[in-house]
Length: 105
Image (cartoon, rainbow, N blue to C red):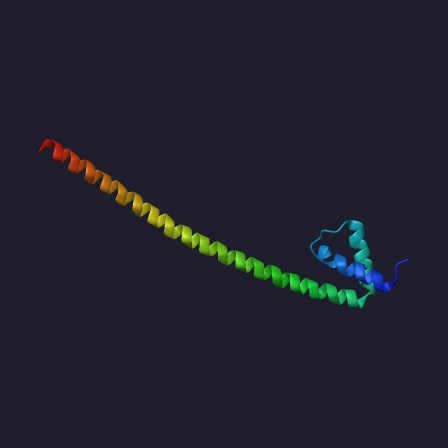
């Protein structure tokens, strides 16, 4: 038989999985039943839940900033590619024009 401390240790190991909804239904039910009677584990769950939310918020914010930098960089390179193509095409036309003039002189 599991004593109260052992059960709390098991629950504390499972809480991260429980928060991410990665436990089986039976395990989730076991955790919920334990949390009803254990203030210590409920406090741990609230602390983890707050920490996970902050962590995920920071992660989403960093990802958003990274995507904004990429889109800005792509926009700048896209404009540069367009200008480079136009200048290259104009240079090509000038070379053809000079070649045609040189051949007829």
